Image 1 (tube, rainbow, N blue to C red):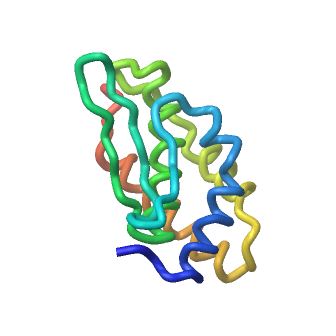
Image 2 (cartoon, rainbow, N blue to C red):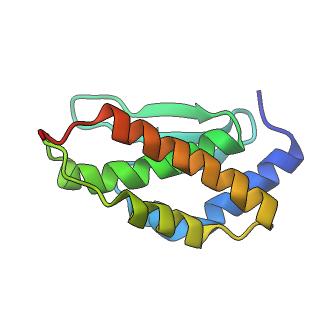
Length: 127
């Protein structure tokens, strides 16, 4: 199901706000299909197929971007062992990219804080 025009416009604005981060990544891209809506594409290799994930709504897109920012710092160059992450710097970077109104920015930060809490809970740094 393709999202409403209002949801699509919000998602487009979010993608513009995080455009430089997305452009820098070699392991995923976000594209829009009139038939399918927004898609996250993770390129495969010579032996594996590309992976395509449908992005259902604005909250899902924001969560995906926050998760990717954390992943990029936790597993630099796709290392197998997690590196400690300064979650507050990720939070500040996300917050600095948001240019919605105060209420929407606050709601966005609640989603980002939820992503950070989940990563903190689920990843051990061998301590």
